[in-house]
Image 1 (cartoon, one colour):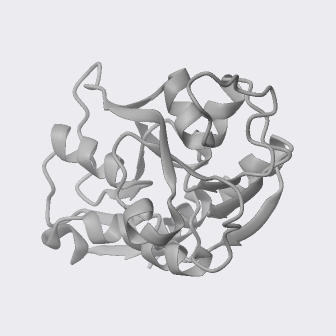
Image 2 (cartoon, helix red, strand yellow):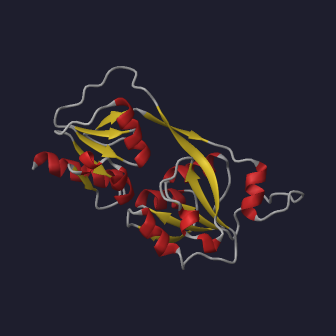
Image 3 (cartoon, helix red, strand yellow):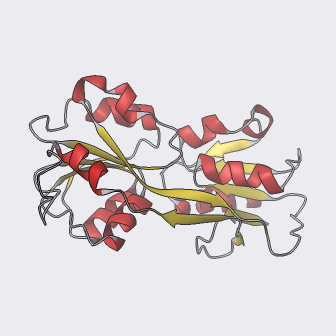
Length: 229
């Protein structure tokens, strides 16, 4: 049996609804600091015009959409096909897209591609596992937290199949899994990228794989092949 942590809809995969996204509203001061505005200055309606935006998940794009903050006049640097699709669906421009699935490699890829003439903003979750701003200190990147992942206890007890294959879409997904389940040696895991794989405990890594592409569908395909092998 194949399971995915979260509510992602995947054919033939059982959901483990133990996480929940909570979208946040950054303060006016946070925005002014990110845009290099003085406290007395007004935030323009098209606040992200000519800025360089870093997205490592589609949730950050969804957060901006909910806040009704347009991104069509900004330069977007993204990791993963789903993040790219989210930016494009919100009428954004994708200046660079990485498929590496490894946050530190993404950092090196964008180091010399980012437009330094304008503000650079990294839209991130509350708990980030790739310290992009710290890894690129010379670029003076401002971070804005747009969402956080909450652990949600299952409404009723869930008994996993002895040969369960569990899909982990982020380190936070693995954190939630550990909170409510104990890993068994008969389980197998699939991580959406190398950063998530590196976050797994050693005993889990020993029986886990990394999806070839940073997408849930890619994890599902690997799981089906593994299940049938």
